[in-house]
Each structure stands twice: as C-alpha cells, then as structure tokens.
Image 1 (cartoon, helix red, strand yellow):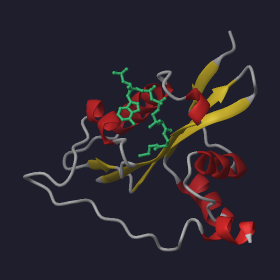
Image 2 (image 1 turned 60 degrees about the horizontal axis):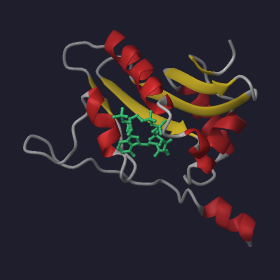
Image 3 (image 1 turned 180 degrees about the vertical axis):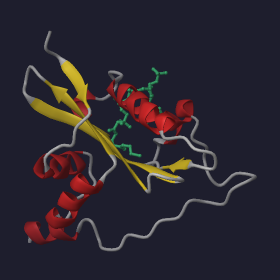
Amino acid sequence: MPGVVILEEAPSVDVFIALREAVGWGTADREAASRSVVNSLYWIILKDEDKERVIGCGRVIGDQGLCYYVQDLIVLPEYQGRGYGRQMMEKIMSYLDSRAATGAIAGLMAAINVENFYLPYGFEKRPNLRMGPGMIRYLADPFEETREKRK
Ligand SMILES: CC(C)(COP(=O)(O)OP(=O)(O)OC[C@H]1O[C@@H](n2cnc3c(N)ncnc32)[C@H](O)[C@@H]1OP(=O)(O)O)[C@@H](O)C(=O)NCCC(=O)NCCS
C-alpha cells in the first residue's frame, strides 16, 4: 500500500539542495552538493509515494574504518512530528551498528534545539566531563548565493 516509505538510496542533487533550503540551511553550491551525493557512504530518502515526492533524507559519511558522521537528516516541515525522523535515525543506526569496530565513533553536529532528538540513539552532548566542545568552521558563507539572488 502506498504511503510514506524510507528507501536506502540517494536523492537527486536538485532534491538534496531543495531539502536543505526547505529547512533554512541556505542554497548549497551545486557542484559540491553533487559530490556529496556521490561520495556519501549511506543514504536514505523519505518518500511520499502518493505524491511521488521526496520529503526527507539523511546520510552517513566517513572513512569506513574508525570515523563516521551523520549529516543532513531532514524531514520537510509539513511532515515533521509524525515519527519519520525517528524512523530514519533507526535506519541510520542500523547502518552504523553494522559497521561498528573497536574504537570506531559516529559524530554529528546537532542543529540548535535538536540535541535532545539524538539522545535516544546514544549520542552524547559536548562539552562534558570527558570531552571538549565540538567545533565547526564554514569554509564559505552558505547564504551568500541566496543573498545574491535577492539583489
Ligand atoms: C530533527 C528532525 C529530523 C526530526 O524529525 P521529525 O520527523 O520531526 O521527528 P519525529 O516526529 O520522528 O520525532 C521523534 C521523537 O523526537 C522528538 N523530537 C522531534 N524533534 C525534536 C527536537 N527538535 N528536539 C528534541 N526532540 C525532538 C519527538 O518529540 C519524538 O519524541 P517521542 O518519540 O518521545 O514521541 C526534523 O525536525 C527536521 O528535519 N528538522 C529540520 C532540520 C534539522 O534541524 N535536522 C537536524 C539536523 S542536526
């Protein structure tokens, strides 16, 4: 029966860019986004089969050894709060569990006010007594292109 399904496949580049835009992350560079689509280790998409529309995604990147990173977990705003984010994280955790090796880690950078969403999957907030803060540097302004278009 059609409905909302999770598929273990990558979105198209255009859909990936649009999903990121829809949750306020700006317009990503298309070339770079296409490399992200191809070079990720594991992708899932959330698809509304009735509307033939991709409504979410999530992915894992990493070195296939000791380091993995969860990125771009997105559910379109109109579909949020219905358990789809949890279903996608469960898929991602199954993938990560299947790759677990002694010493391996999975990281993520939680968006503001989303940290608690990840607690049930065993992710720890930083800083804590054992670990310093996570850190990030944008290599280019993600909102620059959006601003240019508005001019
Ligand atoms: C974060 C996101 C993926 C969650 O997806 P969702 O489909 O709305 O979440 P679900 O309905 O599956 O919620 C699952 C559980 O997490 C909780 N939850 C949802 N959003 C949460 C949040 N921001 N903070 C804490 N808990 C949250 C729900 O209450 C629910 O709890 P329950 O199991 O006790 O009922 C979605 O809100 C989203 O795409 N946000 C914008 C993009 C984003 O910030 N992504 C995360 C990047 S780090």
